[in-house]
Image (cartoon, rainbow, N blue to C red):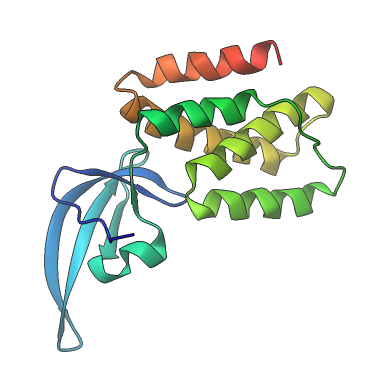
Length: 165
């Protein structure tokens, strides 16, 4: 797969931080060498991230998903034929954190689904509740942009999926 070239104004997903907007493409001189960077402003918290253009693939910077992928995300969220294992919460937490760090919208959807299902069975730990919110926020922002709708609409769709569980 060719490395995607982003330009100013493009939206991109930065793993574990979510959707950002490319504010600029800058060349900086570091230790006598010229390096190009994407200056990315994360929409969720206005954090600025500099991503070397040469490292886009290795850091996992990617485009917003398209319509076909959106439906697959909702399918993952609707899946009920899953087993939430009985491992300790901290082992589960590490596993889910690794999934979130991949930046894969599908892995994040699995985390949201699994934790949403688990909370009907038992009380989530503080860390799990925080992770549930993180997964939800990452998904909602990207799905809203991909579907050209509001975050509230996406949140409602997700609520509807889990209300009937």
